[in-house]
Length: 260
Ligand SMILES: Nc1ncnc2c1ncn2[C@@H]1O[C@H](COP(=O)(O)OP(=O)(O)OP(=O)(O)O)[C@@H](O)[C@H]1O
Ligand SMILES: [Mg+2]
Image 1 (spheres, rainbow, N blue to C red):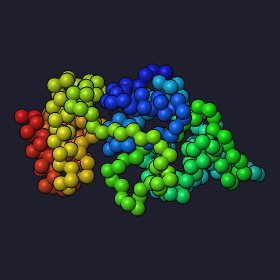
Image 2: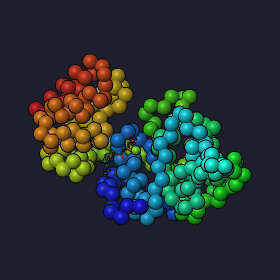
Image 3: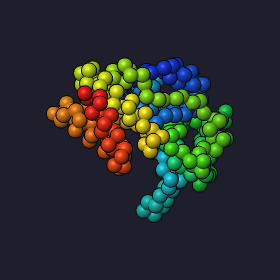
Image 4: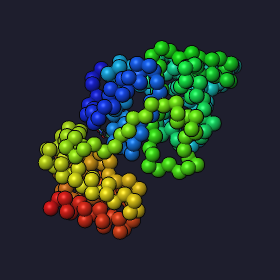
């Protein structure tokens, strides 16, 4: 567990909501687009609650065994290895499953008995049922933007969680975050935030998502490394966001308009 406080700038009542949920060990779902502070928020909350944080990135090929554990061959025997979820359940950590919808539904259901009043994790292969440590909590993230109907969570999974929404913060707050994270002056940070906001307005016009706070921080860092603002914004924002020539042009125009 880190001893230094992670920098997190609260945006609404998310700290209070999370603390209330944690008091009752209710599972929490952090919802929001990429790069808007979900991971940083949880690092901060884990620090604040003095709990270790175990993070698992969910993916399509993830099996229940990747979460709970498996028998592995050792010389002359097979030895059980707890997976990250099991380790967190036993030790009373906060377990963060990032991008939970990426996992298949038959994987996701292993968390069901853990996330209701039973707080149990069955290790079928091992014939063991682990009762969760009193301090254990499950947190998942979910990006509502790019879910298809097939790749949504089951209703019975969703309805187990307390939801906390993360969006892009208000301009002044986002500029404060960009300045603090990059070391840039507030005026530069504010300009990058305006670029970010314009890019977000292009959503739906072919652009899947606008620039995240993360991208704005990258652009600020490139600028501080000596690049001009336009090349920095192009490299950190425009090129990663899209391959479409028209959209790149529209984004480039937005950058130029903000740089002035
Ligand atoms: N409220 C905030 N306070 C402090 N830093 C923030 C905040 N929001 C965003 N950031 C900055 O933006 C960066 C990206 O945020 P983070 O990694 O938490 O995004 P995320 O929502 O977890 O994205 P992803 O869905 O891609 O994992 C952080 O490293 C941090 O620098
Ligand atoms: Mg994250």
